[in-house]
Length: 476
Image (cartoon, rainbow, N blue to C red; front, side, top):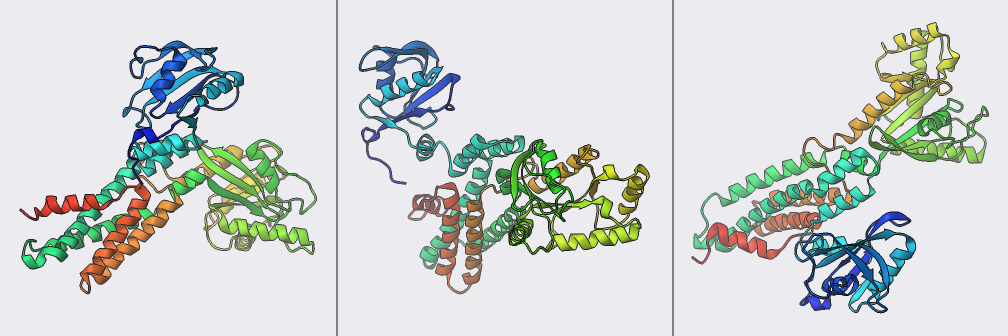
């Protein structure tokens, strides 16, 4: 990132920082060198500025016409103790659209002021070193969090845990690179002690193992961030659309006794026990001469292949009365629905059409069959068994996402995974060339460090030089 030579070249930005629409209080923020000027001329502070981070009730006026626009609170955040690291001011005003528009227009009339672009306050915070890239991404995730688990994960990332992990790896890689380059440059002068490269070998090996464990997280953090993709699949008229409507508690999909009603994928977002779920209802799986229905079946199978969890819905009234035959029927049905043995939950629907004795017998006998459990007996008609089904579904979703508050911080972004895979491959290059060409081996460490730097947003040659002089006292 390029550093600007003078703060006078930086325009002061302003924007509505609270939500749009009518509200009790709206917050308008300004950040930059003209913030103090804006505060003085719009809050009538002709002498000194208010104490930092102290709310002051003032009449807010237009700097051109001197008309009173509103009466509200003003807060002063002098640099560097502000969100952006610059001088900042906040106007807490009434949230009517006319008041907000008037204040924003007044701010725009002050020389050196301009409206902020999307994310520009956070960008300035990053440039000032207030936030790392992973913390910036955590802040964005926190703003967009819709479930409790998403909030917890985003808050943990915004607090810097993930960034600290990557910065620790970066620091260790800088030491490795510094030691290798020092060995290349100064080993002939006998200024480097024996065993330096052996230490680098151990460090690189340890880092590879840690990065590999970090990558083998089964995408839990990414699933939690974007939502677990749960697909409802099965034969026609099994009650798939009824299950969708029951779970989202609204008529999201058309329900009809006519087979093949659902032709396209119907999606809805749900909160299952604090975890985000993207639920998809799909066309019934069957052979059909209808071109539209065949396309629906193709899309259904495509969604099943992409799913994190498939709810395989079966009409239990179609099951053979004999337990062994019923088991064989279900296992064959699962093979026809699922392309491989991925995550699934078998849902036996329409239990309201079975006698109680038959339901109990079916439940008991199928539980003895391996490969079918866990399964759920439900009725979308009278909600029988629905609570037990939701408990099992929640357990599956929680397993797929993991606990956002326990263990080491997890990957949340696809870009992190891509850069870490590049980092891992670059460390393999070090090991490949370690005994052949030390310069190429050092390049592998440098590429690994660059890949990590693309995640954190911080990597520089000066830091490597500092470590060289600190560790080896060259030139002493």
